[in-house]
Length: 429
Image 1 (cartoon, helix red, strand yellow):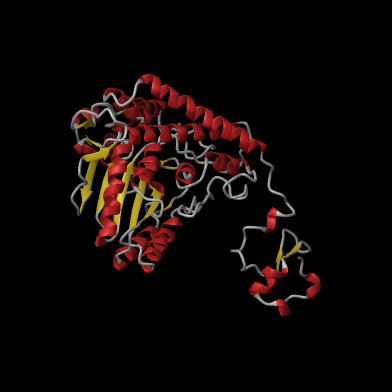
Image 2 (cartoon, helix red, strand yellow):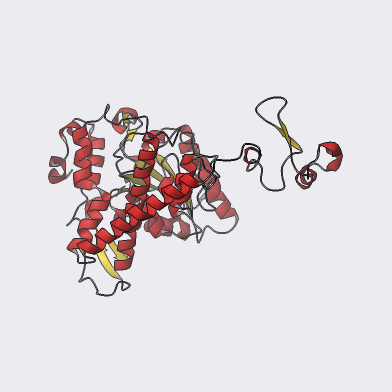
């Protein structure tokens, strides 16, 4: 491992297993000077130019590494910065709302991991699919949702993306399949989505990014999904979002092999600096080209870091030191890293970035107020909706108590079983 990178690690991390120390070093290598333009930056905001990435940002298994050259525009770089700032502001707002007891239940925030969602979205197309686990809020917004919709869902309001009935882990769009609450369960579901793409003849154009954390990496269903994806050559990109801790357990204490990108057996893998948005962008671009060219599935490991606890109920400091967290914030923050590079390269001025920050704050503040004004779901009406796909509802459904029965409309009931199965008196218009 690079001695310079090792020396920057906080003392607490130096006692960790070598594999985890190496992962730490990868994420700690972000900063100004670690990436650089290959030529002068053009004056036009839409003219492409190339960025050269640090060679340490990629490690591979059974495949060649992605190219270190990333083609960008000034406009795209500023958009990446703006998106990351907005997502962090949104998550910070959720943090405050939870502490005010306006958000209840489970809430897992992605503060510190913004480069993963923004880098991935910038590299793929609308019709590509993503499925993930707990830390899903930024993906929900980037995949066609809204900040108001996410905050509204966390508050349990009708304006929420799931009508206020799903909560933090159950937010969806037509190309984003959640937000899933069972550890590792989204991985075989993602393999199924990739199978559907293949079945529909879309595997030469689109792929499914199947995300899970290092804490879910030892689940048997993950390896079953690997096997099926490789056996059937599915357009599946398995993405281990390794933030170094599964709840309160370090990767080194839970996994004999912490090189998660090597755990796909016959599936090639790439480890990526998940604290650098351009590295994530390039890796996702590479992964999609790999799968859509018929090479089968690929495994990506994004080495990243969450600043907060596993969830809002976890202070995040009982199993790691405050020094470690502060070191990662000061040396490897994805937003600060990109900001410093944009200023160093002359892409934008400090005043322009301040305006972006101000706008992000305003957008999130307005979204929070709009969500707060939205009413809660109606118990008489909304309790019975969004249970069955339109036109497939049964004649009736029991509620919380034996006597609480809801009868669906005549059209809905007849669609499923026919009117002969339901007494006419019990059908409602």
